[in-house]
Amino acid sequence: MQTPPSPPNTPPGQAPVQIRNPLHGLTLEAIVTALVAHYGWAGLAERIPVRCFASDPSVASSLKFLRKTPWARDKVEGLYLFMLRETRRASGGRPPASPL
Image (tube, rainbow, N blue to C red; front, top):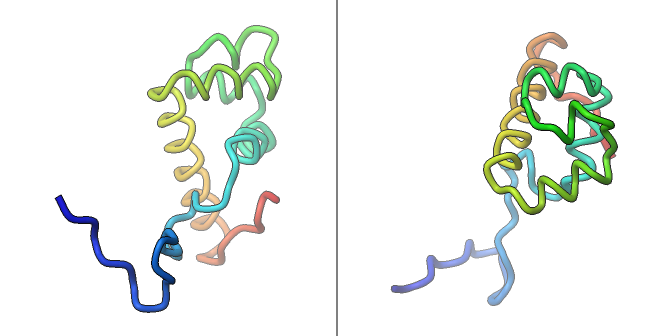
């Protein structure tokens, strides 16, 4: 199986820049922190029912769980993308400020 060719402006051996990917360059910690700031722990636990959000929640315990559990991480990333779309619609199409 061949690897796909890199875009012309990407040096060989480097990953291509992901301009259209809103998750590119964000850490899982930044995503969880932004979600907690937007929804709060209770709102986050309501949307993604996992114990690390509902019972004695913290960013550290959530990160530990999410790094070990791919399905939960997918749900968190999906909720983050939904939050970005929701925020963009509410602001009239302007992109939200970066969480970093």
